[in-house]
Length: 307
Image (cartoon, rainbow, N blue to C red; front, top):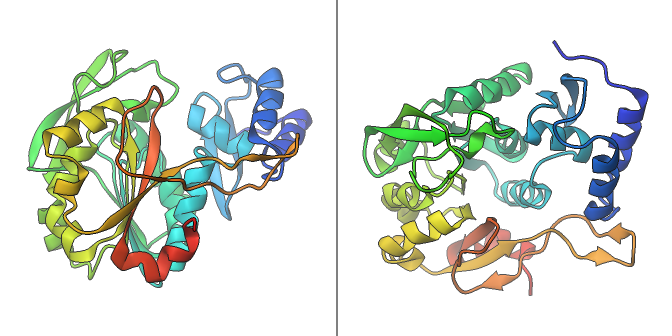
């Protein structure tokens, strides 16, 4: 059951969720008073983009939802703008984790299909969906890949973000636990889903991204959705083994890196996000998200892009 939080926590949250303040300043304030993993109150209930959100301060994602209004704020803003720009948007959330991104997709999508094979986080996502009575969001208890099978999933049982487990054995060096989880071929699932189209696809599967894209090749070629894909060293290696992104998406696309906005003056921010164009995804020390916009989608979402 959610517990009440202190007046000071509510006050700090009020500052933390203000998009016109620089995020770095907000983070310093919150971490000075309520660092991750040190908050004595365990559960909370708060508002999240028009939804009820019940969370735990023991989770890094929930901690950020409470104090900053979300985890990966720039990415959430992009998701909201893209799904709002596409009438009747049909969205796929591959690697749903605890459901935060699916909730944002649900605001403007006619249908959301979320995929999360790991039950420890999937049950949390289902709780969010059920409490908010989101009947147009469907949670599928399996992952997507190039074939139907049971695969070994490795995760760190002590992590404050249990969604960082992976089907790629070398991706998470801190993993201490293994479980066998179900995956299915993406194109086979879509062919049997009855969906008329796919408009937006988010893929965040901890280094397994190339497998997901390869398993959805026919679906992606037929519908050319806008995509948001997490890029890590493991993801880039997987793409390179399959000939690169252009081999998996053999149609004209434009690539953009999703970044937080630049600061304005000393204390302020314009909020939202930046989308600088790039030519190809490259691995960096930290992960980042890549926005892939097919040229066929420019009449719909082009107004969101730079230039």
